[in-house]
Image 1 (cartoon, helix red, strand yellow):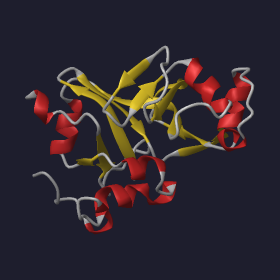
Image 2: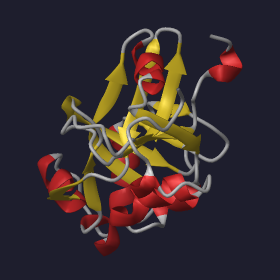
Image 3: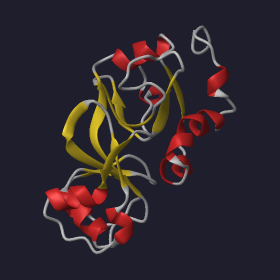
Length: 187
């Protein structure tokens, strides 16, 4: 697979027929995709937890009311005890990966401390866990019509209501995902 064929900085949308409870009706932002595999963060599965609970568990002082009530997402079934922050570029954090000019993935405590004080990135999404695929696994699932890949949309990631993200991600390429049937797709 050529480098240009990798799906970094794109969404993959679960097709309506994908029955896996970890991914049914999800939108996943792909942070890394290479011949070795893929890593993504599910962006439309909020947990019942609010970010204030994470601050408390980590003994982080929080003065930002909006940060305390921000949802915490289930980013995927792998390492659900580990936190991931997708955010707009800002600051110099201890453990960050620049995905694109618009999005950074940070796993270090310092970004959470800044968010808690209202001094972090302008836009962020905090998730526990990630979605991971081994070598060739995601490509096979796409060929099997489990996923539809679409361009990344910053508005979908940060501004679209959570319950509308699945439809909105497909709509950006003119697809009504609810009308797709099992044989449709990449065949």
